[in-house]
Length: 316
Image (cartoon, rainbow, N blue to C red):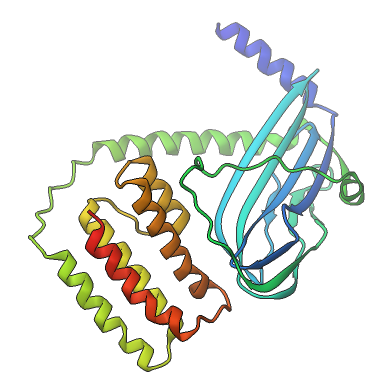
């Protein structure tokens, strides 16, 4: 078995010598016309053909006018006759928080030219998105699976504009092989040390009337409305409802987005579907004001406290 692995490794390295690398990159969005609060998917596809010495470093745009709610990546590699082709896709879920014609700046892809040893940069094209001022419709995630990256089409005209060919030499990857071996040794030591640590001591939680505490927090949060801080009020109500659900359901929702909270409730069957639907719609209504330019009228603001109390009173 070891001889077979050694022969395969020699065959692979032989195919890499004197091979060429073709680097291509393109950025796309799944929707170019949306409203405030809508979510779009921005994708960067990087394709490398031939001998591969190291992964390029990708710098995404600043996403002005949007808020990043999630990011994912996927890779695919194929080796034919010793020549490798690797396609990497970086995906960002963005929520529109500013209206008008929004231009997403180009993404930068940096790589080391194996011939000259110098760093080079290619850029994708900027992407234009039209964001309207209308209020988005509620989106339910009750029947959705875990968010996964979608296949991204690669427009041929964009690829031709930013492709570049590089000559590869085997001697260039020797430092990276040594770094990889060093990293592997450090990783093994770290895993060993982590699993040697004793288990944390059990934490004793005092008996607290969480429903009463949540209602007190809601009443106190209304002081923000006297200061005309509507956005701050919506932030506070969101955190109060999340605090109450964590305490009652004995689970953590910290650092989770609304989409992730709803999916966790459904996946673990913590509540019935009708209650999950009500919570989802309520949290999205709060998100619309928290993260966009949308301004609710007085009637909408007054209803927030009532809806929050309904969830707290009838959660279980």
